[in-house]
Each structure stands twice: as C-alpha cells, then as structure tokens.
Image (cartoon, rainbow, N blue to C red; front, side, top):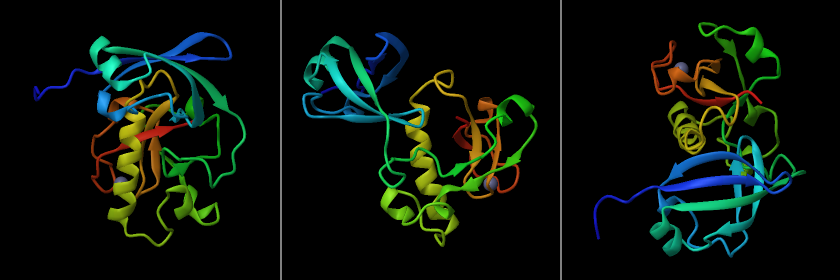
Length: 187
Ligand SMILES: [Zn+2]
C-alpha cells in the first residue's frame, strides 16, 4: 500500500437533462464502497439521489481513476430532513448582484429558524462558538469539494454572522474574530 492515494475524477450528470453539470476530484475513500446501495448526495443546497454510477464499486473506480454519476434531484423535503451544508443564510437573494467584493453583510443562523435544529445536524442555538465553528468547518469542507462555479459561492463566518461574495477569501481570517472564513452559498 502506497501512502499516496490517487484522487478519483468525478463527473456529475443531471439525469433530467443528460448534461454533465460538474466535475470534481475526490479521494476514493470519501466515496461509498459501492453505489449499488441507494446513495444520496448533497450538492449546492439540493439533495440528489444517485440513479446510476459507472463504475459502481470503489475497487473499480480506484483502478480507473474516474467515475460518472447520473443524479436525480430530490424535490421536496422537510427542513429537518435536509442535510445543511452551511449554518447561516441570507434572505436577500439579489445580494450577490448588489454587493461588491469588499462588502460584508449580516447573515442569520438557520438554527434560530427551525424547530429541533440538532436533528438536522445543526448546532443548538446555545452552543459554544467553538462547537458552532467546528460543525460549520466540516460542512464547508464538503462544499469545498465542488468548484465555486457550480454554485454561487462566497465566504462567511458562522460565529460573527457576516458574509462576503469573494470566494478568493476562503480560509482567510474573518475580519471580526480571525477564524478562517468558510464557504457560503447564496442560492
Ligand atoms: Zn468571525
């Protein structure tokens, strides 16, 4: 066994249109052992179910270095069932057009808006800032696996509740608390 594992090139195809909408590289161990078992993935704030994977087994795509997934978007889910990929949101959908790269806007924690946020993988509203940041950082790592062009992504601080549209600031220090900025979706 080598210490370096080659990354697998992932091509994501929307089953509804037949078009590839994203390509990304992932460590094979971050992908399921087999796609033959029903698999859902969280991409750009939507849940997708894997309808077909070629090849479907880790042993095979580890060897070939590439896997193509046909995905179907899962349309309706209750807020509790959605796996969130960030802790904050902003209501104003036009923000991304209005804001410049040096502007910061206030965001709102999702856990104040939904009942029982812990059931959806969110921190409790009374959680310690370090706990909040730890959860947000793990979610950001998942988002960071997909290129910024796939989703309209910027950056945010889940502790200070501020966001900025400039993805180039990812992992730079927050202007308020100095924690590394995390990936934020505007859509
Ligand atoms: Zn901060």
